[in-house]
Image (cartoon, rainbow, N blue to C red):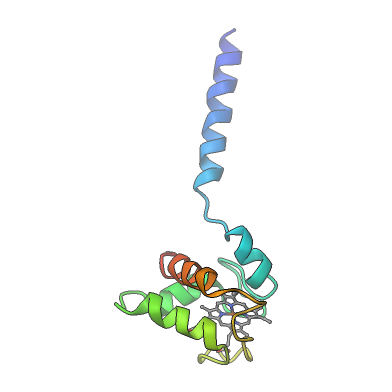
Length: 104
Ligand code: HEC
């Protein structure tokens, strides 16, 4: 009986631990995931690196949203990003910009 209780507590901790880990939103994976990940470089910079670039800038979210919309190059020397990624709409772009700016 005692070991069952311990098991329940341990698995509860594991579940809440994984829920706290940051993951890319599902539509982000679909529209951006081929080239971006949260914390590793792929074709483009990791989104945490982008967050660090804009850390402390008051217009971070707006600048990131504008850059996602127009695409091109932003000084990472990794090539060109296609405008709107792989077909993200404006509402998605706003939410990705907010998500990226909020990463630490
Ligand atoms: C085909 C590959 C590709 C796709 C798809 C793509 N990106 Fe990018 N992205 C890049 C590359 C390459 C760069 C870096 C360009 C450079 O060298 O400056 C970049 C840069 C960025 C930056 C940095 C902007 C800055 O101001 O520094 C952000 C933010 C970003 N992408 C977000 C997104 C989002 C959100 C999506 C999905 C809607 C997306 N990207 C889809 C390739 C991609």
